Image 1: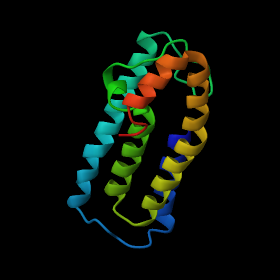
Image 2 (image 1 turned 60 degrees about the vertical axis):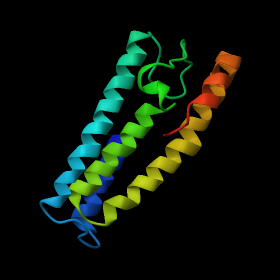
Image 3 (image 1 turned 30 degrees about the vertical axis):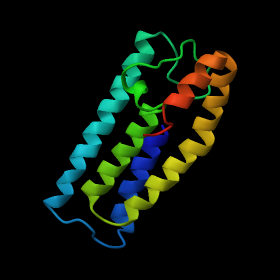
Length: 140
């Protein structure tokens, strides 16, 4: 939901407050790369949640600590994927204003969602979580 709200905000800002064209056609097509990579990260993480029968929803208690697949490289592949989707979209739009949304989204995810989720994981998985957290970065 937050991703879609952010995407809608980017498109609206591009339409009504583009500020300045940064990337012209055909160079803006480079945005397809982070967009597709972000989608792949999200789909991979979502499959891992489903395969392990645990929740994908923020603020819900996880049944399993997933440490394989994309989770070997980042503790938050879905949030990273969402940021990549936003970066790709901003590049495709090519104007300055959509880039304002990206840091706002990343900061909100980092300070609100991830902090709360990590507290829950620490309480639920204890030493297993601490070991994983020590060895795998939050973002990349």
